[in-house]
Image (tube, rainbow, N blue to C red; front, side):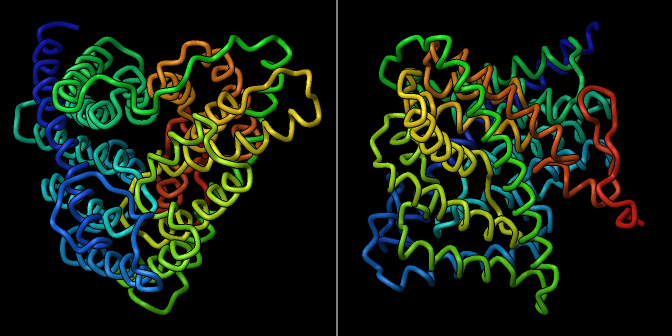
Length: 443
């Protein structure tokens, strides 16, 4: 480590400040398309699609969005398809971290259209991909090595997550666990500084309040901690099943006798039909996560939300449209956590379980099991809520989910796609896992 680290750190902070502005712009752009699509008005005000009065006409909205995104991918760049993190991993592992400059604006625009027309995604995946693309472009325009360009890509990606949620620590950890696969000062320092700068930009533009504030929690007793650990293991099983379901749907679309540019519109049909009966599944749905951690839903409402959100997200993501996975996984995992905690409390009433902690553990454990970004998952849920008394259940539950995922699944939601293309993905720092299917190696 030396003067080059100082230079890359300076570049990373510059990238982060730009990405911080882009992140807030993407949030406004999603709101703009939501207002146009569901309420036929020009406004940048945040609004949920759930309050629309379109009736059966709501089915046409995500279909139209899918058509636009499909043709944007066809005429623009295929890399806008999907949620962005696997594509960033592939670029790092196979292309010396070189991302096409067009993705710096095409990815956020396609995601804003997809989510604004009802796509059941979060804004975080696209802005992570956009930040990574911008960091990569800066690394291509300056005199840096491929390793340094990888750090700039990771810094931009971390900045995107930090600027969206205000979670600088978990954003840096996510970059280390999913993109860099190393824990070294030369990479940790620039990524950490970029995350901090991006969160500072968010605080300046949107305020420092946590994304999903929670009422004060009581310290869980030891018996409750044991149950939350069991809860994490159960959610880990669901993480495996959900990952396999997403790729089963994606494989199903491969057999559709239509060009892939039409697939997002087909996925939009499922999103729209489900949206007629369960309007809260439409769009980002951050309000749903807030209600889950506040225990504002009935168990029946939680069950319906988790089930229909999963179906909508699974089909839409499998169709190859543009959108993030963090918010859907947190919604589905939070619902699972509430339902399973309620069931465990019924079996053992004296355990002293709290449904709010159950939601928190469920959402983080599902992401930990699906992505295997263990440390990022734990800290992410804490930073979103600012609840220190939830840290120990989070740590235990995510560890259990991570263990189950490793035992039952070779690849993850993030690595299965690129593993099928023949890319050897590091399992941890410096160790590659086997390919999903050697016969599917890229030629």
